[in-house]
Length: 351
Image (cartoon, rainbow, N blue to C red):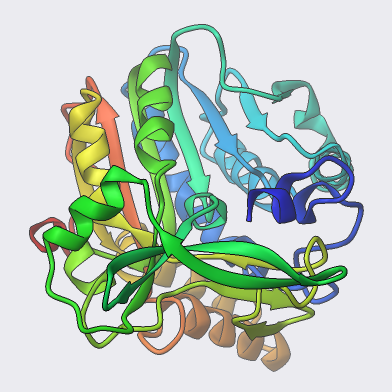
């Protein structure tokens, strides 16, 4: 999975193809409506008010749409960050992000700095990770009569890849197996990168918040006996399927997020769990409907704009679309205030 996604020039995220939007393979929330990013900007605004010289760091900025929209809205609120850092390992995506920001808000381009790794200085501010964890490589496993076995990859015939289960040597997989009761044939995944990744964020976060937005579940739901085929999905030209060998390097490969693992990793690395809720509750508590009403009033004669706006809100908040499947988690250090975005619905008890 790591090779298919991140091999230089050949991996999915390092190759020069369009990935986001109608002309790519999938659409993320910032591409659906700028109101999504405006709500994030409202969240950033409240936090930045309490921090002196706070910055924003976006990890994996996609097309650059979210960064541009956040900067535009923070400008209207008169609370631009000192710097807007973007951590991007793909040269192709970096170029696309620069092009997007120059097209939408060139006046802010001097505030934006691109990084290839986490800062090597103490960071104060907000770290945004929108659909980052789902793109981390995972280990697949299956319950067999011999116990838990790990999913591997073999070359079945010349240039034909196939899967093969073999005894695992990963302690965490054995621990997971011993802690649950699964029927033979049960398959799923485990993300072993979460703990070291969160620890690396903790190492640089002097004061501020790590805001995570992704699709996933608490552990009891993630590994529910009825979810017996796992969550691994591939995306190619807006079609979803489960075969990671179909177009290696040309398709996205993702897995849902175990948010309990994120919370555990945060607490072990010295971060505080500040909030956990659904995307719908998060956006609504940050004024999504107020933005919608304002735009509808301003475009009262334009039914096309109103219909498009209503469709976008439906996609972002409906339980049958992104509203319930996507979750929002805030982790932080040195933050005392109650956070906007988590006051409408608290789901921390499910972790």
